[in-house]
Length: 497
Image (cartoon, rainbow, N blue to C red; front, top):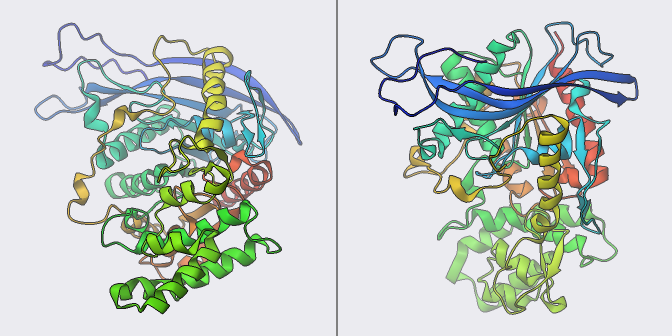
């Protein structure tokens, strides 16, 4: 993707001319059907823009985006023939904002994966990497993109990173990279799939819309792992009761994971919690101070039984348990806190009286393996060398701008619905973790059920799957295997012509 355009006239004289910097290596992955030969390309790609008043196509560099592409070699033995233009391409990104794509890259999608351990099976360094026989590469080529100020992605010399730290700028940056990658790799006749996790699902819906609205580029499949499509459903802000309703089924599932619903299945617990959240709970919260003492006490007892805490604590919380408070309260008698990213994880409480957990034990126990793994894969196995620190998770992207949503909820449900109406062939796959206290499954269910699309499109074009794990359900081995299979089925179906 190298470009010989001249530097911008007002750029600093000391700014060097930028070029793509990539490492290309050949590999093979053993699959049940035989070895898969593929090429890995890891590196930074220069993105250029055409500022007003300058000659057409003489754009100035404004960003260097880091990405890793895995492309099956022509003639390789794969489930789809890589020597035909119909082989799909999956563009993947995590969220945050501020997270690199090391999680999806090494946890689920790539040909190599890290062994991070699990809630009841922690691991210690040195961490191991193994071949990923369930890699999406078996059925599609894969491009893992690190958004600005994550991974090795940085602004061009003389440019400011904060211009990219916001909803629209981030959307446009990822869209520009995808357009550039398709052009440079001559893949305009491939089916395009976008796969995002967490804020990456917000990004994914926005990018799919931008590709179509701005460039008339059609997305075939949109995979949303642990989605958040409307922040009003999960933001605990004064006067907004929606998050309390949508989080309650997740609280109940987490309580079940810690043995607080003995003799009952997870399905039974979740069904009861969802029924209460959809029918009785909204009315209880809506009545507020009009509830009698007896009604309030009865509601507190019912909520407490569902989520595994003391009714008196629920009453003190005004029948509205906030998620960080719940995670500190659930196992307080054991002096332990519960994970937000994955409620199956716990850690000793630093302060047994604290209203919130000090830190997230699920991230603390999982992240080191991914950080070690991505640095080993990129620097050693894929041969990309740089003195830049790989930013696995960065707070440097904050404050993140949502100026486009001033005075209204931050949401991409409108984008998703509009894109589905424009593209009748677009299909959506949604993956929920029952124990995810970052993006609760009931909130996503609610938004999807209220998309401005025909009922038949909701029933036929959106597939929703559930896993007995958390936000990164692929850290739970049975869930990883199931999710990998579901994604392969989704992409393969979308690649049919």
